[in-house]
Length: 55
Image 1 (spheres, rainbow, N blue to C red):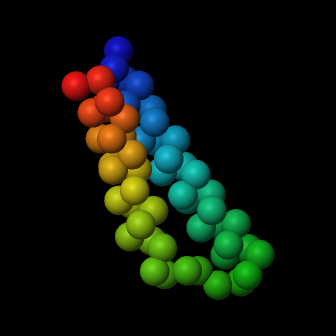
Image 2 (image 1 turned 135 degrees about the vertical axis):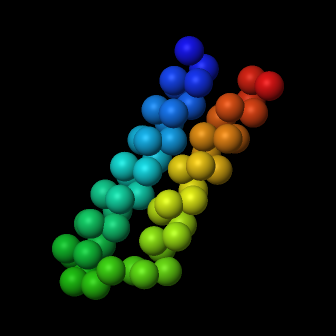
């Protein structure tokens, strides 16, 4: 159960990051290229931190 919850939290964080990139692209008409690596790595960090709360 914890593994599934961890995966869902990681996917939700990834979805929020992608949504922010799309929103920024539409509103400001430019993609913040510096943020693309962050959007891809932060969900992993969040999921691992969440998982480590119970270890």
